[in-house]
Every structure is written in structure tokens, then in C-alpha cells.
Length: 177
Image 1 (cartoon, rainbow, N blue to C red):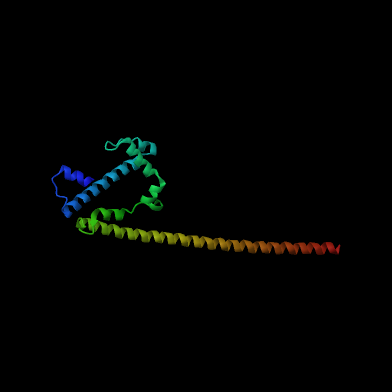
Image 2: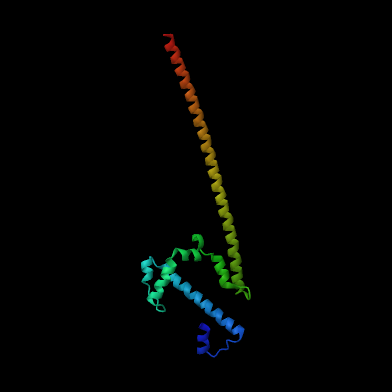
């Protein structure tokens, strides 16, 4: 449909595959950018009610409300944001700066991606280290509590023995009288 409109408005030969592919890429990117901007408008609102009041000149009120309904729907959130995890910003960066056909958009983009990947790996290792440290602290605390429990049990047994010995002594005195 969009390509038909382009053909009607411009003198362009869409029979050539590279022209058609280029037009489709441009339209896909523009469409994705527009959806992203709309979603940002929605997410920057303080509440659902405030989001619904946003005026988007290119959309009817009904269409904007449909988009709001979709973004609020937990099922949709699950599709775009599985398990409540933020979308991977690193992969998004790669998606916007790299294609399998053309490679990286620039050497700077590739270098930035590589640096971010290294930083991410370092942060993951640090996080794993923190988790290990937390696990070790918990294990130490568990051992301390188990030792403390053993000590209390030993004290209880000792106190019971002492009480039993006293009770036996009292019984002997009572029997002798």
C-alpha cells in the first residue's frame, strides 16, 4: 500500500529490486522511529490518565487510545518486555548501527559497541562476584547460627541434667525422712 502511494506521488521505478528494497527500508525505519516516539510520549506521562490526554496531531483520539490500551495490556508488555526485563540496550544499539549487508555504520559505532560489550562483561563479572560474596556471607551466618543453636542445645541438656540431679537429691532426702 505504501509503495503504491510512493509510485503515485513520485516518478520512481519500483520494479527495480534495489529501489524497492531501499524504499521499504526507509519506510520501515521511519515507521519504527515514529512508533518509538509515540511510545516515549506514553511512557513519559505520569499516569495512564495523563497519557490518554496527550494530543498527537497525526492520530485520531480513538487511535491514540487504542495504542494506550495496547501498551497498558500486560499481555503486550509480556511480548515486548519478557519477564519485566528491560530491552537490551546493547543489542538495540547494534540493531541501529549495524547490518549484515553493510556492516557497521562507522568505525566509531563499532568501537563504541565493542567498548560497551567489554564494560557489560566486566559488570556481569562484578555482579557475579557480589552474588558469590552474598552467598558466602549467608553461608557464614548460617554456620554461626547452627553453632549457636548447638551451643544452646548443649546448655539446655546440661541444665536438664543438673535439674534431674537436683530432683534426684531431693527425692533421696525425702525418702530418708
